[in-house]
Length: 170
Ligand code: SF4
Image (tube, rainbow, N blue to C red; front, side, top):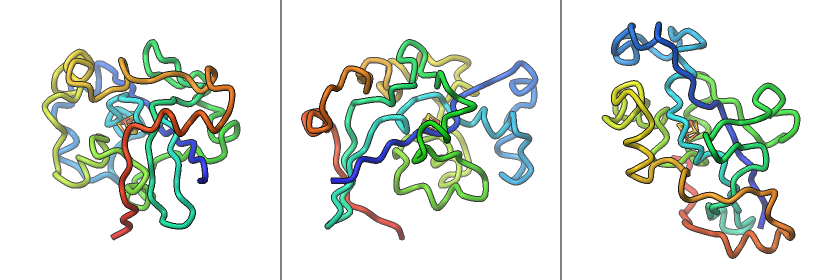
């Protein structure tokens, strides 16, 4: 098994973004400002969960173990600016590389949903106004994750697998 340690941009929102209602439906990804792009991240933290990939079958299994740099109180990366240096496999999502990264992204990732459906889900904080709904629905890892810092041996990761899916790069 190969360990995938994955972490991308986390949710940020400003009053200005909220004022620009439904911007995500009115312009293309390439026209988003950096702030608009980051605000699409719902802050679920699911991409920060460690994944295991079978080197023979490419099957990817997700654990409930979050990157050691993720603050589990608020799902924010504590090393945001250094994250790709500290964790080389941490990917910075951009409009250009988005579709290439889908096979590692959770089905509920808002970048993925926006790309696939052209809109954000109703529980997204840009629509609902807070993270409460997505926390209650179990979309975020709020009540699910443990920190990598509590894991003493990589073998223990197998005991933390919560979901497996076949590799699909179509
Ligand atoms: S899975 Fe997508 S929406 Fe969730 S934290 Fe990662 S990038 Fe943001």
